[in-house]
Image 1 (cartoon, one colour):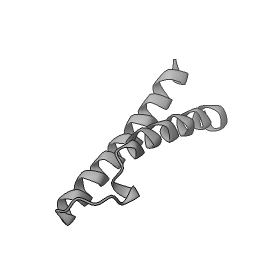
Image 2 (spheres, rainbow, N blue to C red; image 1 turned 180 degrees about the horizontal axis):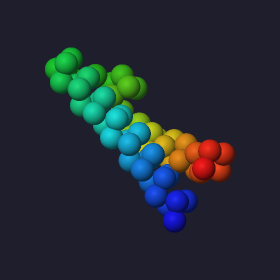
Image 3 (cartoon, rainbow, N blue to C red; image 1 turned 135 degrees about the vertical axis):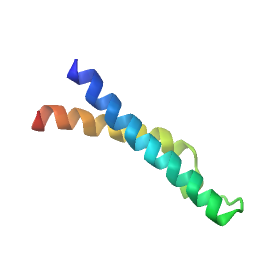
Length: 62
């Protein structure tokens, strides 16, 4: 069960942090830009990175 819960929690946490980062940055700049840091696909990338980190956490630290 921990192979499902921990990667999901890590992935959702990383994705939420990136979504908040993009939202806050757009709110501060108040302009539209094509900069790569504003790409919404980074949220999915951070979700996948979080899943990988969750699996590493289970394999090595749990």
